[in-house]
Length: 247
Image (cartoon, rainbow, N blue to C red; front, side, top):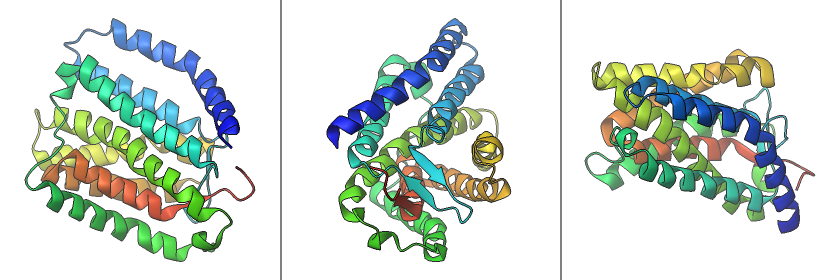
């Protein structure tokens, strides 16, 4: 399983390199004064990293918004930990942008609890509507730890970008509530290619990501990025199942 994970991860990395090189050049050539443009480049690079997971069959989406992830927990855990590594790297290399990121506001435990609760309100109804009882699938409990790392690690990277950088930047120009609304709408819009081209599932994905994005934006406004990560990660974790017969 580990050897297979290495092959899958190398294939994913090699597939991404040409696009990421171009995004890196674009980012490097952009003046630091153009903060909004630099954030947009980072968002687009992340969308590329996320959306190519579909044709590479690292995940798949169904019409009932069930998200099936690769059944190999080593791949999932590595992707989640790599996302945390990218967050740490960005904090070190991009201190000017990182100043926009509000990790926590108020009581952190209260924020995390609120985030988990809001994520549960989003993800649990969809989990209950799924035709498949995920816990009964073969290998589910061995797969789950890797999925937990991916759900919270990878989605923290997404939250740092949308709720940390974008929402933080917007708060310098508009009210916190409006910044949260814009980040939520932008989050849904950045799923447009995934919804309308990569998967062809259309409006259900856009509606779900709009609700999720607005909820995460509100939680971030109240308690910071750590709390919004709890919202995002919990919602995805509740909806996720392993791909049957795909390890």
